[in-house]
Image (cartoon, rainbow, N blue to C red):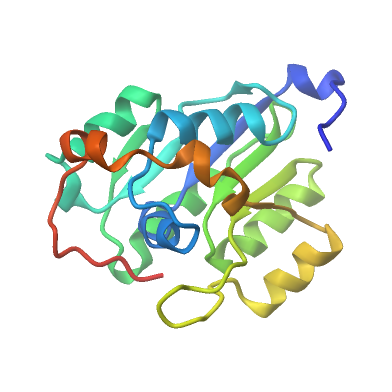
Length: 197
């Protein structure tokens, strides 16, 4: 059900994407290539009620993507690409560092795209401050091993609707999927790159 516009629509939202996790998760929802313009529309304009962003939506990507077309397409769509290695959870630490200072007087909503439960404690604190958190991920089983990447604790929280509002990304697969023909020209990067959630 679409949210009724309210004073909250005048607030701003923060959008953060765990890039390594997202690149892995896309296969689970049946997306071969990401349409970053479509992803921007979903995360900024379709989820929640705030339509203004406090800053360009952040995506963490491994430094090996720095010269790849995927980086140029995401930037053109309105994302802020931050290159950071996933070793030693450096990418997680970067996102946590962005979440920490968010001020509830300025930020009314957070949209985070990940299946990683490591952000839960920080996000619960943000909820306690009055910020609404929309957690965009998928509860579908992985097509390769049949496992759900969401932890049992997160699934239980999502089932109750508290403290986070779960957004099943599979419902937006058509909007964030790019046709294979166009993607041959717009996506690149190491063909042997594997992203582990």
